[in-house]
Image (cartoon, rainbow, N blue to C red):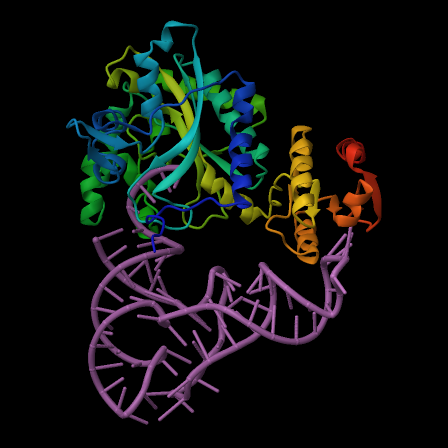
Length: 417
RNA sequence: GUGGGUGUAGCUCAGCUGGUAGAGCACCGGGUUGUGGUCCCGGGGGCCGCGGGUUCAAGUCCCGUCACUCACCCCA
């Protein structure tokens, strides 16, 4: 027997309805804010991710699904969404119009990691990107839209962790300072390597014995240049005005190289070790990195799979699928033909209708009617056919009445209004 | 890549210090030859993850392997 590949899963009814509903809820606020839908390929030139996300990141160095196509091109399944969207913006010169360019996207991304609770090799996220301005008001808007999206998806128990990572003017100096500090700390070999490669990420280490040693480490927020500090101040002011609550997280670091200034993560405590349900930030250098013009941007990705887990942890009631309204129960060939047509007519009239197939017995068919959740069952047998009627049974009260076959559709429509 | 846990019916699981396979739920049928939910009765379904070993005898003990799962690293 075949099984779904490691780290993937099948979305099955009825749970799949919840997936659709959550995905729609997460982006609904952004759509109200003028974000337009963009869809980009699930695979891209490998070099796009290597350059955009960063060669030194775990994502690029060991987690990409990379393959050569028959033309000898190296392609990779996207490990995240922003690089592809930026590529499309540059390729189609979307920045030539009014700024910012506001876009939303939804779909799967792929990373070759060991799966665990809330972490999959094929995972789904919704993204928004606001490209072309470095206005801190836009940062706050983006953050508020995530906050609204989570609430629309039914969550209340999440927190926003916020910080600023500085920019090209102030981060290099801070990075050096941090590196000097970290070189004097007693760390394992892996971590020492990271000190040289990407020292900021050492700050994010979860291990208690590492964190103890970092208590006195210099923090980016204390070394921001005047422009970055001013930008961060306005972001927080706007956030407060928007009624969004946050917690300062000076040690928050993201795994992707392109982030600058505003950086954030939304976390939830009900998920297990993987607590992030969304994350993002500003990426003012990304466009230039990809060979485009100097084009600032800010955005986020929210994890649909993780939001579903968070909903379960919070006990949010499951989403109900479309309820069947009328269930048809035919007895015999002639009745089946007749009710098949009636069910078709009901559906065209906009009612959810279903029927018993395969010549099931009356008892079994009624059982199906009951399980379908239908308000009414329509029973049609020999006697009814002879009389030109069908039996319409109210499944809640058990009352049953004969209804003229010719007026069956309109009668049911009226009953269900 | 590293470590822990778990693999028995479609699902959730029981099966003691080894003695030849069980429950609940679900599904199908009957009780009610044209009426669902509750109830009662019946039925189909399992190489006990796979391979090897110990033993008169292995779901049970030992070794290996694979899968799933949780955690580290990292991230949504």
